[in-house]
Image 1 (cartoon, rainbow, N blue to C red):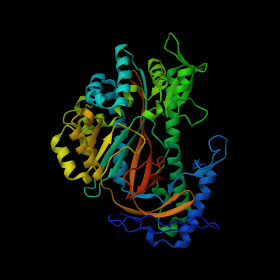
Image 2 (tube, helix red, strand yellow; image 1 turned 90 degrees about the vertical axis):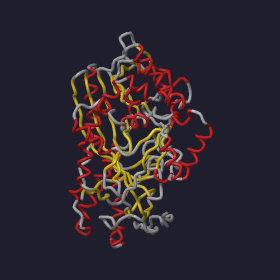
Image 3 (cartoon, rainbow, N blue to C red; image 1 turned 30 degrees about the vertical axis):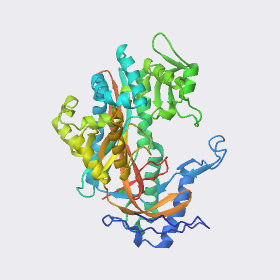
Image 4 (cartoon, one colour; image 1 turned 90 degrees about the horizontal axis):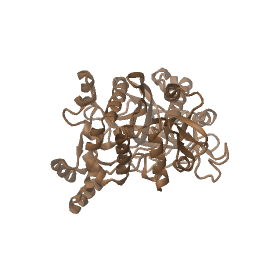
Length: 480
């Protein structure tokens, strides 16, 4: 396991860099260990200045007034100093998969029986998923149709070092983070390579364009247009510590449903509801939040995501889709089915006794996943063995709250990581997320595109990979 980095803060426009122990991966395509130290310090300083000038910043939680007073308490978002080498063939494969996964999510969302049946055991073991399923059931009972459906999605991948295969980690259907900051990091890296590329033997044109933010906004605008009410607005549902938007509790207090199905909140008709919150039980501390979620689902507003899209993105549904003959239920094109299957990692239910036995014997080869989003929820290493043995001892249906996934081991690279103005030099692994936008009005598909990407890089000694949760930094691609 890599040793903690030794770090020194910025002093006089320079950043000192500490070393960590060598990783066990293959030699990276871009070996930063040969870069002159003085050059590194110049790049680091310019990167921090660029971040301040171009809005690659987030609120600094250590500053009490941050988030309350505009412009107070900002710090650069955590980022990798240079882009991560990534095979162009795998990049193209991931981009080609985006519209196929978009369509798959939409078709799965329309199959209420599949969603309810697949999650029936999970419902008994997981109270949060159970509440989501209850809302879904109510929509089925009243025959609620989502004629206009908007999906802003992200499919995450790693390249397995041993097999060289691009393998999917998960599909995200709610609150897909970082389309804004992610594209800024791509711009930052192109800017740095325009200035320093000849010294690094790197070409800025090999960093792909990343239009995630503009294309997500365009998709929201097109959905608003389809709603066909020029007086209606787009509403963002956020967590309680954010500003200028609506929390679930506020929607419950201020919201009403008109006889024609129009959702009105604070006197404004709502055309599109975008959920930046609502994916974790922490977002529903009382019945008020659940009433708000139900109110929105009952309305004619376009939900991003609808309750069925939300459920289609659960880990259990992902695991069900890898089973033999299940994809054929939703996808007609045999070539598309083959492309999807090629990127599927091993996924199993905990009622597979042979797999559970192997995971207990070799826990390092598996990840145990609950039906949760937001980072910090998965179980790794010896904790997998302990969790499985505890569930077996209890003998209840609590195991239905989890799935098992093949653990993917990507190539380890030596990388400079920037966090809080300090540069770390560490052995890292990376995860590629491909954004997708899907908009449909009844039988007409208005939008089905790949729209940008998110690259996250973390220390190879870390199991989790969330940026906001503090495990990873934002990165971009350098195509090889």
